[in-house]
Length: 345
Image (cartoon, rainbow, N blue to C red; front, side, top):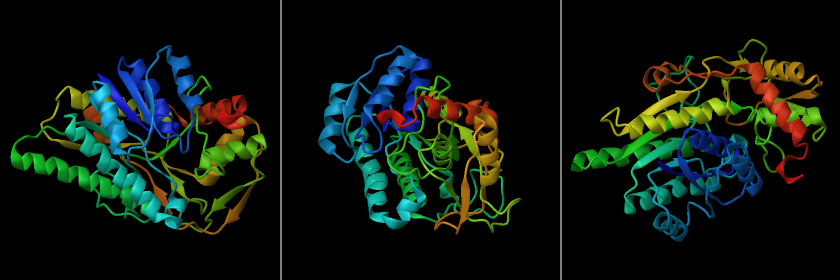
């Protein structure tokens, strides 16, 4: 299949490109490089030995999308283009709704116009809000505690409405996967691609690794009074390559017509939660470095604990996360050592 990967130069998108190419698919990448750079895609080509076209542009731009679909015989779309920082979304909600929601609308309109009806959407565990219990199953009530999460939930609702509308008319062409993943970390084992955010990292592990290598002075641990084992927030961290492979499994599942339902939801996680302090200790063990940190007040939009029930993905997709915490940390440190200033060094 030929797969359009939006946001393919980003952290998750670049690893998905590797997984797709290694599974025998062809890809076309669309990215505006707002929080990424071409180097990551050059390295995807180096890892896989495969070449592929790259289009610089934004999913909000109809002419760019029209030109892309006219120029390439696209069979399916993996949609990663979107902003993803919880804290920033609380400060700039309109930016998140414009990019994450309106951008997806533009993409779906272009797909419908060009009769491409297979979509793998990069959603998030934030659509569960602050769950009453853990582990979290796909049929839990949906809500959100921040604009980032609401943007993902809005898109999910739009996509479900899209499928329902086609079922009413009897066309039923759309096949959509809503991939609710938890907290991706790690890097490709080659050390060539990894997480390289612009400016100060919003996610935990790149912040830890930048402290360890000396780019940042200390990590701020937001919240020490949560009802958890050590007072810090607990999350389900999974290796980014496990996450990427889960997306490929979902693509193959839909392409093979294994279900008549038009919209599918899968959690991607490990089914296990680790606290922030446990993550710091695990990184110190893998790197041999001491990570300086300081406690800080809770961050707006954060919750105490969140981890996945992944039995649905295991039963339907035959997918489970195979890489453990030590591998996540070792691969992250290998990436950071090889790229002390990121891709832009």
